[in-house]
Length: 137
Image (cartoon, rainbow, N blue to C red; front, top):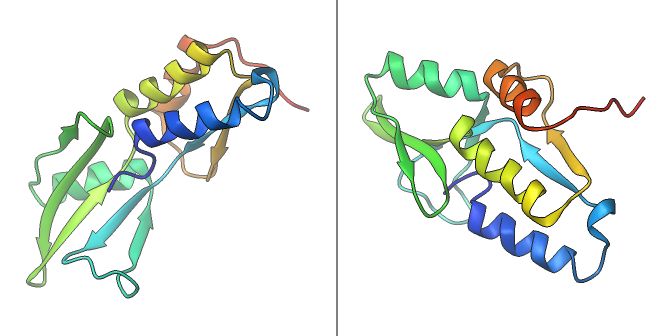
């Protein structure tokens, strides 16, 4: 499934707002994806963590069509490798835009990133276009 499905992220934000003032909440933004080998087996399946850029490169290398799930508002694709099916979920500007809209909708403090070291230029361009950015230093 998606790294951070928007409907689940919204549920967490709405719950957090019952306990914490909006101006003290920063939304965690995932800056990575997962490459799962199928079939998924609860308790034994493990995903490989990949960057968003690596996900797109993997789709291109395997001639996979990137689809967009409207429920989770997240991109994904499937490909075959060594006779095994893989399913990759990651973030792109469409999924990030949805997460950024929650920050605006609920008046949250801002965003923080999980895995800042993965360069994903499109994210930074969208972030700069959407928000006034202040360094926490």
